[in-house]
Amino acid sequence: MKVFEEAYNLRNKKINKIEKIKEEKIPLEFFAQFEELCKGSYEENITASDTKHFLKCFGIYDKGSSDSFVIRIRIPGGQLSIEQALKLAQTAKKYGNDYIDITTRGQLEFRYLKFSELPTVLNELESVGITTFQCAGDNFRGAVTSPLDGYSKTSPIDTMPLLEQMQDVFLKNEDWIGTLPRKFNTAILGDTVNTCNIFGNDCAFALASKNGEYGFNLYLGGKVGVQARPLNLFVKPNQVKDVFETVIKLFKSYGFRDNRNKNRLNFLLDAVSLEEFAKGIIEFSKLPLDEAGELLVKEEFTLDDTSTIELKNNKSAIHFGIPSGIFCGKDLEEAALLAKNYDGIIRLTFEQSFYIITDTSNIQDIKTSPLYTKYDSYHNIYFNNQIACAGTNECSFGVIPNKPDAIEMAMYLNKHIPIENGKVRMYWSACPKGCGIHGVADIGFEGAKAKDEEGNSCYGVKIFIGGKAANSILEARQLTKAIPLPKAQEVTKELLSIYKSAKLENETFESFDTRVLANLEIEEIQSRIGL
Image 1 (spheres, rainbow, N blue to C red):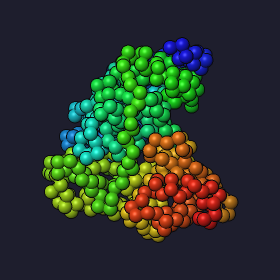
Image 2 (cartoon, one colour; image 1 turned 60 degrees about the horizontal axis):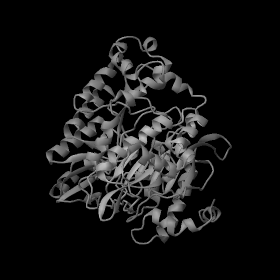
Image 3 (cartoon, rainbow, N blue to C red; image 1 turned 180 degrees about the vertical axis):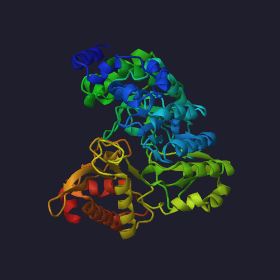
């Protein structure tokens, strides 16, 4: 492990402020006192250290006042039982202004929570097996898999049992609460169709085969705008937990704790090399791991205009498109009751929407329900695969409102250039941090300050094209500098006009880009759309 030690010693001569805060107290000791703290004054009982680290260890964000707390809720694999969905709905209505955000990891966030009510909210969720532990800060984000796991016709491995094994390693374990150098995202996919942005994670197990056996190729180092890289290791299902535990132990032991902007796992990989990290996994775990097999995750996920996916055993998934993930407790309650009435289940998606999975015979009944009718107008090419992070209304880093901007763009495009039988992934980030994963979108938007025609400062975006959902070293290309939002609508309309006129039957924008736009210089594309 010499190469790991050398990299660690080179980068950790001086640790950052958060690492120093971690030394002040043990997170579980803080949490044990939390209910008592909430009985007193927010201003007196919550310190800057609590806000910067200890609250985040339990999925709690302090937004600066006693009635504006946010919690991030862990929904493993995006899978909700009816009982859990009803409890979440009731809690959001009672304590969170009936507001819910569906996140880009198929998780949920509540906002507008009062400091004094936080223990009650957390206890309510725990009563149905839902936790907020380790959902923020230097911890493990909610692990993701396909929302159709266990039902998809293209999935030879059910991954939820493996996901739960990985989660059991760290969840509510004192050794792992707030002890990582930086946040850590995990995904596992047993499907040939990439339905969970599998390669955008720090640690990803992607469906593969070797010598006639199904398993996973291991990919590491993904983050916003960076796809995970292959380690040339094939992991059998019964090895997943041990490999995962080895990866996170190496990251915890040798990860960088100096510059927080360069402390994610991918920076450790750069320092030691993929080959050495793979050797470290084998040496540390003592597992007889083979070289990578054939990667089977090769298909693009496309939702057709019926918003329905045919599954195994006469089951179907009915898609409810939630614009920018802006949801509410009332509608989650209706979804839960709808699923219950038709013996269905709810699955959240990384594109901030959800499915009800039920018997195929129930499709028409569900599609005539008031809830489906409410969201049916959003079933089009511009909303089906939309993502938008919080924006200025909820995030101090946001440069633009973002969620309403994404919705307005989709409505504008659907009015002026409707497209059938295609797919375009339009992802919005309100700032360069890229929480809306715009760097892997077909058309990505990054919030920025722009100048209007009179030279006044206004909300704007930088537009990027050519991001890939599939594993690829290709990066999205910047199409425009910061331009005002109305101009961005016009530019995007012209770009989609090229797609509409030149795409093949049912061709997605990603495939179209690879076939056509990727072969053109940015200047030529700009010329064709009038920039």
